[in-house]
Amino acid sequence: MIVDCHCHAGPGDGFSGPWDTTARLGPYLARASRAGIDRTTIFAAFHSDYRKANDLVGRLIRRRPDRFFGFVFVHAEASRNQVRPFVSDLVARYGFCGLKVHRRHARITREIAEVASDLQLPVIYDVMGEVAPVELLAREFPRVAFILPHLGSFGDDWAAQMACTDLLVRVPNVYADTAGVRYFDHLEQAVRRAGPAKILFGSDGPWLHPALELDKIRQLRLAHADEALLLGGNFLRLTSAARRAYASRFASSICSARSVIFKSRAAC
Image (tube, rainbow, N blue to C red; front, side):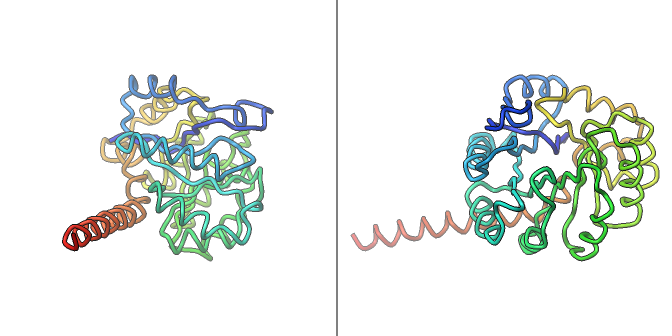
């Protein structure tokens, strides 16, 4: 199974660029289908109301659970002191299996990491080149998988990408995705030094073409088993606990509902 771990979905309301205006999935899905991508992890575009934005993403997941996984987009500052109920509700209702945090809003907080640890949710944290503090965070919360998109910097900050690779080598629970990495040699070096178990395929769709991003993985010329880790195995492993927990809660709620119906009919 090929899983794109990094794709946005739905409207934004900032209108300063594509990233906070709209993320339409129609063209992306056609391109991903042609490229052989089986599943896609979606999270909201930048938005001023993440309750509204995450609900929209959740409804997409509910309509196409065979096609989408989802991560809750958390605004570290706006959700301060409310992260647990905010995330728990969305996970219970829609089956989100991870968190997305962006330093553009605010740096990730202890509160977010504690919730991720308790709920066994991996965190995609866009550090915008600020790689070093992630080591402190990851060592403080060893049960949380922290995934740095763009190998640490979408802005082609080669020094940040090299620092990210060093971090992948040193810290067991830090990972990176490949979305938008243009310095191919850096990507190749990251896989070679940190190992294929530390890198996840991501496209940053719908704005980047998923087939082009996927071809970067193909061009690494990895052994089949190693390539399979990047293309989906690592993502499925890192989200397995969250997905199992949701499936268990969902099954329990169905059983409870059936029990209520049965008792109601018996009473009649």
